[in-house]
Amino acid sequence: MRTPRGRRLSRLGAIGAAALVALGVVPVAPAVAEQRRDVMFVGNNWDGTVDLLDAEHFGKYQQINVVPDLAQRLAEMTPDEHAAMLVIRNTAGEGHDQLVDDIAVAPDGRTMYVSRPSLGDVSAFEIATGRQVWRTEVSGYRSDHMALSPDGSRLAVSATTANVVDMLDPATGGIVASFPTGDFPHENRYSADGRTLYNATIGRVIMPDEPALDGLKGNRWLTIVDTASMAVTDVIDFGVGIRPFLVLPDGRTMYAQLSFHHGFIEYDLVEKRITRTVHLPLSEAAEKLRRDEYPLDSAHHGLASNGDNTKLCDAGTVSDYAAIISLPGLTTDSLVPTGKKPYWAATTPNGRYCVLSNSDSDDVSVVDFAGGGELARVPVGDHPQRVRGYAIPADVLK
Image (cartoon, rainbow, N blue to C red; front, side, top):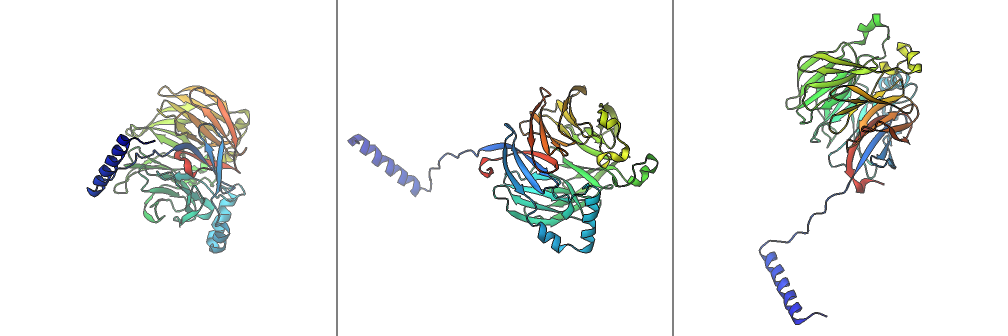
């Protein structure tokens, strides 16, 4: 029961609220912080799907079909586009169409961008519903690795047959700029401040793997671009295919895997020289491989660092392991067995774990940077390739 004093206080409160409204001052309820979850996005290249995995407990959320328009795309293709698709199927695709290569997620965590090599395009999807938002064809016939700028305003996409990187507006999918690269542009990386973009090329990997014919592989460059002007500021000729790489926050130290090399290098971007080379062991099966049996010239393909850049995770692709390496000493902490043919390595958003896509066993391995062991192995779709980690809103997950 309300007392007279309580009624008076209630009336005073109502009068006070009315006064605030009259003055244009409306009380606002405290904002509720958006709940986010750490999620790994796994692109299943031959399925044309993306699996969303819990990056903390390793369970599975939804799977998104990223080729809902496949029949329409095939019907619309020109004869030369069909021919290019067949070439991709019989070379890089190992007899399969390549339907999802790379993945990027918008800063708000609600839109996913996917490059679709065999379709020669990039497409955007709502994560919550899987609805296709836009689609853009890249230069040439094949799309590959991507990188989203830290502010989410530009999406860099390697257009491998055109030897350029196309820059897209993620809001519309429109191509707003392009810059030239070496042969077969591959990995793209932004600096932490977004002012610099690095592109590495792997050369014509479908050409003969005979060392005497190495010149046929073409230009294998690291191209460095100023993102404000989109001008190429430097080109470094490595003379060998540059596989996955990363650049430390100092903007000087680069770690890179190279074609046919079992391990990786440390490279000084200022002095333009290799400062150290890490050689890692081969499995018995890998020792028996001919050069032309390496998957697209890759011995090791996948390199990631932990949250504070004190550890590296190196995917031993043809030897089926993950190597955990300590920095700055470059000492090997452990070699962790994985599934078959780990073809990418990515760090979870919390910086604690390395997730490797095992492309031949259709699963991913979760390896602890600190302890070096495999914590989980999670089945995914057909031929998982690129893996990326993001913190996204909980309400888009199923």
